[in-house]
Structures are given as structure tokens and as C-alpha cells.
Length: 297
Image 1 (tube, rainbow, N blue to C red):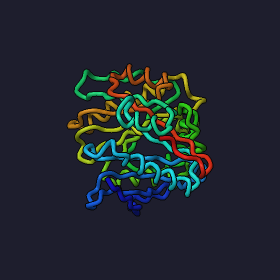
Image 2 (cartoon, rainbow, N blue to C red; image 1 turned 135 degrees about the vertical axis):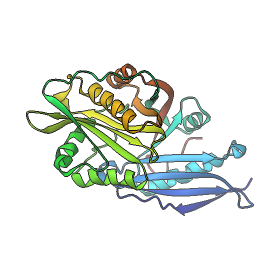
Image 3 (tube, helix red, strand yellow; image 1 turned 120 degrees about the horizontal axis):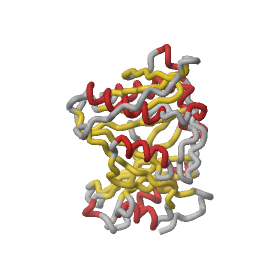
């Protein structure tokens, strides 16, 4: 079967990343597959790019995916990408496809779900010297700088074997990230632990809720700065977040989270709060070297 690949301009442009795309069509012009490559605009992360590849189930095993991947690899090299990332359900056809084409497992992600109609969550006692604050949407001005500083708590989060590079945040980026969620019609809910003696944020947890308050909400990150660990802040914040979410969104079904398999502390917290694993994904990587090196088939 003759396949034609057409490069596309993807309108999903963001200040910190952009996508390029390819459409695969058969000889009659019918779409049979697509591939997207998200390029990082920040210099510290420009060596990484994320791959999303899809082939219509009826058209698989005809090397369409391989042709799309070849185009993606060439495009990635043109943009000086050194490492491709792609997620796939463990032992799925997509996972096996990636393995066949030279992708290795850089990290394994455990996905979990908390049903909000389960038994109530008991919020742990308040750790001495801390208090909780919360807000919806963009961070209030009074917390903007210290909240941005607290994002450094994610810097040493387990990443498996993937070197993501430095992830630099400033107040402008912090506000913009919240505005993007708002523009999508979703609701960002943040809870933070404040150290009483300094008035600075020691840790935070973010949750994104669908705009209509129904279905499932997604945790975007929970972090505690190293100097404040060992006080139970992460458990305290997430438990209070669950309580507030139940009160504010009575029609919401569940909360979703994902954790790198090597992050045992967060897995223990999630289990204690009642999250149950649903599936596991491999985050696979493909190192790109000199342009003359062929992709493995």
C-alpha cells in the first residue's frame, strides 16, 4: 500500500513549547495515521521532545507507524533534539512497537484513582509551625513569589533514568500556567503549607477540575521543599485538598494521580489516602545521535 506523509502546521502553540505534525494517508487520500512531536522552547529542556503516534487499528502492521516514526526522528534531528520521549501502557501494542524501534524504558509511571464516594478522609493533625492556605486559579499576588520559589521542591523528584534538565520558574510563568488551565475551561485548585515563622510557602499541591465540576479531576503536582520534609506536610495538604474538593464539587466522581515507580514516599501517601492503582505506563526514550545513524526496525 502506498502511503503519503504530509507535514502539518499544528496550531497548538505555547510560549514554552510547540508541536510539529505529520499526517499519513493512503493512495485515495484517506487518513490512516498521524504523529506529533512536541518541541521544548526553553533552552534547558530543548534536548527533549515528546512523541505521540497513532495508526488506525485497521491499518496496523503495514509499516505506517514505522514511516511516521522515521519522519519524526528526522524532524527531531532537524531541531537538534537529542532524546525522544513516548508513553505507552506496559506491554501494550504501542509499548512493544516502541521497544522494537529501539526505545528503552526511562521511567515507569503508576496511575491511581480515588473514588470520592468512598469513606471520608480524616485530615491529619496540623503539624506545629505550619498553616494551610488555598486558592483557585492564578496565585494571589501576596503568595506569587514564595509559591514560585516553592516549585523548587519538584527539582529532586524521582524521574527514573531521564535527565530532563533544569526547570526554571519565575512569577510570570507561574501565572501563565494557571491562565492556560483557565483558558481551557478547567479549574485549578491549589493548597499550600505556610511556615508560620517566615510566612513563606513550604509545600503545595495542585488539582485541576473539569469546568463543569463533573467526572474526574487530575493532580498536577505535590511538592515539599527539602528543609520542610519529615513533618507530614504532603499527607496533610493532600488530605485537606480531598476534603475541600468534596465540599466544592459534589458531582465530581474521582481524583486521578500518577507517580514514578521509584517514588515510594508518594506511593505510600496515596495508598493511605485511599488511591487504588489503575494501570502502569512505560515512559520510553530514544537517544538520537548523528544524523547518519539509522533508526532500528
